Amino acid sequence: MKSILLIGIGRFGRLVAQELNDLGHEIMAVDDDEERVNSILPYVTNAQIGDSTNEEFLRSLGINSYDACIVTIGNDFQSSLETTSLLKELGAKLVVSRAETDIQKKFLLRNGADHVVYPEKQVAKWTAITYSSELVFDYIEIDDDYAIYEVSIPSSWIGQRVCDIDIRKKYNINILGTKKDGKLNASITPDYVFSEGFNLLVIGEHKAIQKCFRIG
Image (cartoon, rainbow, N blue to C red; front, top):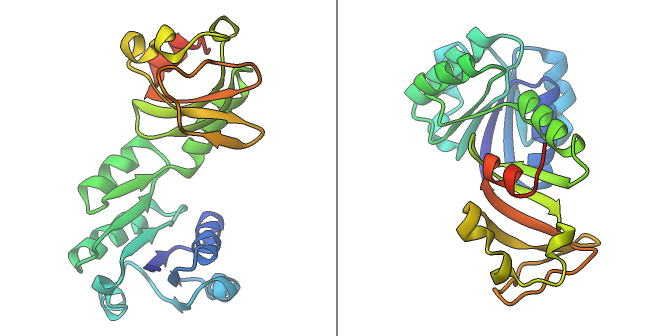
């Protein structure tokens, strides 16, 4: 269980709070809107109404006592930037901030954010990749260059062994496992023989995976 300070209770912030609550973490939620604060009470350990750009208010929360501070302010980038900077100045161990553009990400990282999330951009990218190809069943972005894909096994691979295909050597792609009916098999050896009806979990560069599996 971790102690989390969540600043900003809009739609995204509320979803984050609900997920953190389901995971059993302690959550202090902060927003300058009383109605939002009241609405989040069932999902958090505590909540306060306050201005996160006010240094004295933030100081009163004991910033360095939290394992992570998550800034989910979405409609006021100036406030998000100021809050992020103040959190770091006050000794925050980990600051995760929300961005909507690449420029916002750069400013947040320069001003105290340890990590930046793009909820809208990430969901948009997942939707585009997953539903624009019949070969892709799921997709998890690791960074700008690498991702994990769940893809259908090419028909030409059926009956062949992993070592016969050797996509690690050809494309620098690693096989994490196979999946069928929601069940994962992560024990894949070089002698594993590809079978029909299974999906493949692979990790590698976007371009390499898209070329290997002819996606896009």
